Image 1 (cartoon, helix red, strand yellow):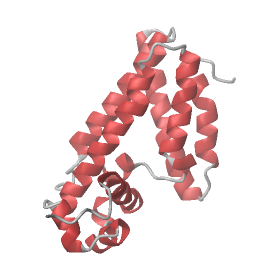
Image 2: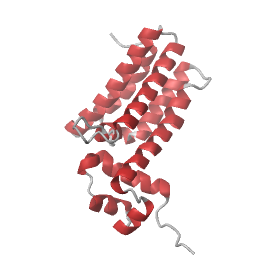
Image 3: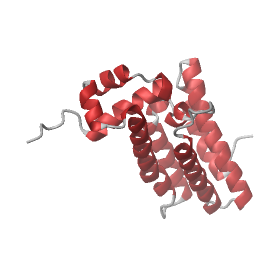
Image 4: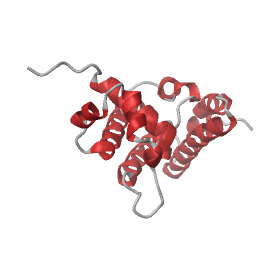
Length: 191
């Protein structure tokens, strides 16, 4: 009989994600992934025979599923736009731990030749989120072109705020973005 796993799959993926968010793909060593996971390298390879590549793919797959369930599907619910955007802010705040967690997509995307392993999966996730935000803004009354612009701006603000948080060592930019996001998506920006 196989020994029970000491680390649940969900816990393991979250721990690996934290390493990839902090270090990116190339910067994440197997020693660091092993240490963060709480598993010996042999146990880690048993769970992920494809090595670090498979770990990153699984982290991206789980991230995509979480984003689908907690953001994209939620944006399509049949509640008021104000209720949905309030929930969006809550979900993003939880997902990025108040701005303390880096963006996985930003850390794993690469423009270097031969290192663009995950770019297709990341582009798919980004397009899905942009489409959901645009559909939400359109459903809240914006013209299609305006809704697409609002979605792009919202993504730019989200990603930019996370970069600022990391570079300045404060979560203030992320918290400011969360306060501005409803107005951005609903077209009620401050002048």
